[in-house]
Structures are given as C-alpha cells and as structure tokens.
Amino acid sequence: MAIDVCKSPRSGATSDVDNGWTIWEEYVVKVDDANETVDDIYDAVIAVSGTSYTGSSGSLADLQNVELTKSSQGKLIWIAKVNFNSRSSGFSTLYPDMEVSIDFVDVSVPFVKGYTTGDPRGTPSVAVVNTAKQPFDPPLTKMVPAEQITIIIEENNLNHVSNANLLYTINNASFALLDVTYDPLTLLMRGFQARKTWNSGNAKWTKTYVLAYRSETWAIDVQDRGTKVLNGSGEQIPYYQNGVEFTEPFFLTSGSFDDPSVAGFEPDILTFNPYWTADWSGLDFPASS
Image (cartoon, rainbow, N blue to C red; front, top):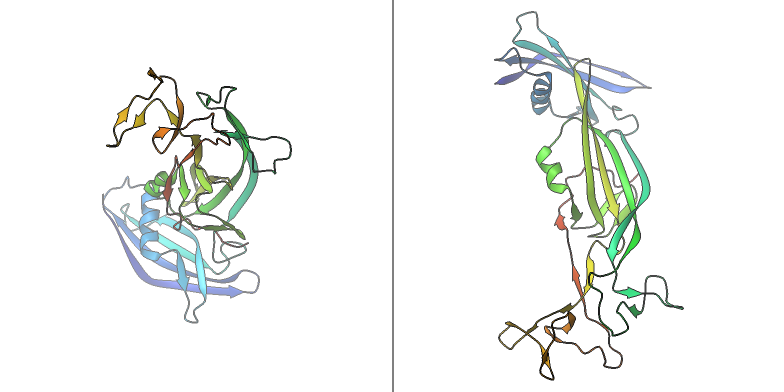
C-alpha cells in the first residue's frame, strides 16, 4: 500500500501571550487503498512535515497535533492539518510531556565476602567459605536495593527495533537524566511498555521506560574455583595432591591450585558483566529539570 503526501499552499499562524505562537500547514494525502489505517497515514504525514518548525527569526515550535479528515474529493484522499506550537509541550519546547518516579526494588546477587564488626559499609572483609575454607556451591546470595527509575514520556512515533534492542542492556557511557549523571555500567534497562491513543484521529505514543540503578555496577563477582587446573600448554588437567585427585571444587589463582591453608589467604575474585553494554544516546530524555 502506497501513501503519497504533498504539501499544499494553505497555511496560517496565530500568536498570543498565553499560548505562544502557532503555525499550521496543510498536506494532501493520497492512498491507494481505502482501508489504509489512520496510524499509517499519520506516520506518513509526520515523515514529511517533521516534528518541529523553525520560524524566520529562528524561533522553534514543536509539533502539537495532526488533524486528519477525509476529503470531499474521494475516499482515497485525506487532508492533514499539521499544527506546530511554541509551547506544545506545556512547559518546554525541547522535550515532550514526561513524568519520572523513583522507588526501590530488591535484587539478588551472589556475595563472596561478608561483614564483621568494624568493617566500613561497602567494605566487607570476611571470605565466604566454610570452616575448611571451601567455597559454597552454589554461592550464597543476598538481597540488595536497586534504585528504580520509571520514565513515562509522550512521543509521536515508536521505533520497535530500537526499543527492543535496549531491553536488558546497560549504559556504555555516562548518562545524564534530570540533573543527575550516572556512571557507565550502572543503569539497567529492565522494562519498556508502549501505549498508543487516538483523539479525533490524532495519535500519540505513551512510552514507559523502567531503569534500575546500582552504584556498584551490574557486574557479578565470583570466587575463582573449579575442579581442574591448567598445564603449561593451557590444557585442563586434574589436580593431585599426595597422589589423590581433587574432585570437589577448590580455589584457583591464574589457573593453578590456590592453597587456602596459607596464612593471609584471600580467594581470587573474578568479575563478569552479564549484560550487554549499549549506546543510550538516542534516548531523548532531558539531562536537566
């Protein structure tokens, strides 16, 4: 199905103190199928008109709405009136309407060190091992709070591929949102929802993004242990001590046996990032309030 959008010579403008200045442009839309959806027609018009209008003085107006009506010239012709307004977002011409809320959710993470009396917060000192200095399998876990940021934003279009690709990714660079700059790898895109509504033929998307924040990043720390060691060729081989093969997991350091009976023993910690890092620069969230 084809949709042809042509700008007509008809346009107009108004201005007042309370509502800013408004300009409208008219477009003629021709379709080759009478069953063409209003949604597709709307998107085709926006692709031609754009979502902002720059006046002769350089002042900017954002898309306010699109009024679609059937033409009296035939059922395959629509008339689109595109309205731009310098205050279309209500309080800013830079961003659409948006709502942000913050709460906290519990996240279960493995932990390899525990606290003892006198440990500073965030610096546990006790290795999580049994009385024989063996690691637990599976590792113990704990609940930690993660700040959850819910962003509800109104926009004129939806990029299914882009939004799907960002789910369960973490920010690969510093990310600014409402006067707060989050360090790389600390934000997780854990949810997305989109809802489309129509009002007199005009459509808008209400998108909900759910982010989770951990200052420690979303990396997972685990103790280096296993049932094999590496030989000089980098091959996995069993480990023997006094002629007895170790078959239960034991501590490792750089692929070799790590003896927990040595004074001052500390297990080696391996850090893994379970989530793909992604470029979030395309998310049009305001950096400041």
